[in-house]
Image 1 (cartoon, rainbow, N blue to C red):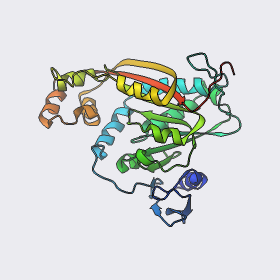
Image 2: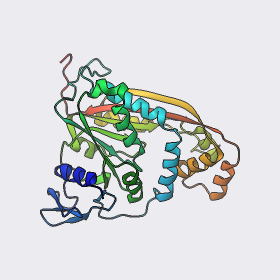
Image 3: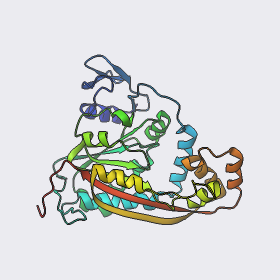
Length: 319
């Protein structure tokens, strides 16, 4: 564990609460964190904190995250990441406004750090790239002198291990979205990218003027694989309407954007794409091998990005 890891944990320990009893926590000897009732959790040598009590079997294993990391490095998600960065920059700028002409007060960028949680961060690529994107020269107008703190949680220890190894300046935790280990109203921005949501927890841990940004696949997302795996079955077609409806029941939608593109990939990259996507879950090894060999060299990226604010807010027009 680096000195930077120790500093990140010690500076942000106050945001955590014990996943067992809910009490505040403190760092104990740079090797563990402990609550007032002596519930103790390890700090890993790689600098992440494991706050998960019970870790059952999951299809999100080390091989899946390794393949997803390889696909991420090819640039497959780059158009999506850039769109999320642009949306975040627009929303948190001094003149931020929402789509129904109701103004929102911008985050006080000069006076505070901006805490960004990636809920369901996997191997950490999206969060790291988004923070880097916001720091790029092109987006300095949004951030001025604000400090960005990235926090990533995932139920998969294997994913967090990859994240902690590859991206050092972020607070990584193994934790359960069903019972997040955070005190109330801790985050200015919550990201939920291609991951299940827990809106009850999101509303509890987001600040009063916080923003939730969720990314969901559209019907054309990886349509080439969906057709190859599920042609003439009820799984060949997909709709995200239920996901969008659930979001709107819990958060005021302030912005939406669609991102669509084609991406060229090699046969080896196709192999890793098949390994990383839940579309292949339940598909036989023989079928996956068959699809790997049929010559798919382009796939479709198709996403909806939704931004929302907690419904408990009382918006005022032209504030």
